[in-house]
Length: 177
Length: 256
Image (cartoon, rainbow over all chains, first blue to last red; front, side, top):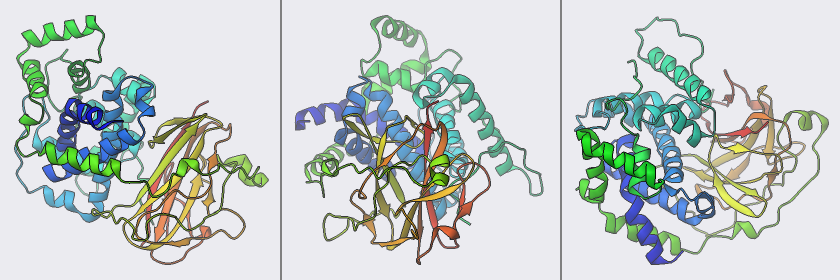
């Protein structure tokens, strides 16, 4: 792809990638890095989205995957928990509040990828179950099931100590030991 | 905390961010686009959301789009460490009966030290990464965890390691059974690896026809280890590794 084509694609789509990464990761530095990494991946393998003709949908998938992995990485470094005490401004109208985003990041850090992706698309992006199903490549019913599992897990995480967990929560496949 | 359907609290009937982004990008059919613009004209919240998109990076004063674009262009012009797609795709034939019955793996090549620059590119943020590349027919693209795969798909892997250590790739089927897949073969055990991004691992994995979810786990430990030190964890796709090890997992959803 030529430089001017890259520049055109960047001008058209990068603000949306940055905006989502800013919401999901919570700070400008990580959103910068996410935007660069997402575009590098998308531009190195343009066949993946050129065939579909829907670069926006593909960018959502790549951005979600990248940000989810970054959130998981942070969990290990405990940045996410330290972030809790830092006041952040809310986004514009029609966007999730900073407090909600901080809370949901904590849950995203420990649930499995399918649950996390469904939660990001429906709860943060405000997609319909149908839209989330299309982008995830699953049925609408599966999206509903994934969200149910996500909610159970989030409730278990914030329940008072000693509360027995509900069955059906999301496992943590990344946990070792 | 109980999460509601939509954290943004938009009025019922308002389109999603994806829909508005596709509208802004000109990717929607004319009829749908016209209906959405009419909606935004009468909805204060959506009018603001569209204005945010029209502003582009101006809506984010802290962003430096020129610097971002320059960084992207510079990265794209870097010569790849090795044109991995030019490597041969190796088929080794069926595995043993036990493995063939359970695993996705039909063909696996052996480890060889990753090629590429002498100085590894160390990831500043220190994360463990397992990247998967899919070749279907003649098309090649990076795959995402949770993507749908089909019989005959060929996968190759690159790794991103925050520190030097010892690594092993293991496959796990829906029943939780684990099988080393890189390195592969009798006595397969972890191999030492330097910090940074590896080139593509030698050889490819070809998926068989068994449907269902399967996982590829990258296990990274500070010391040498063998597959017998790994065991299925609680729940699907979970693996237990020795203390001090880290695991990055990739979900394969195989079409029925």
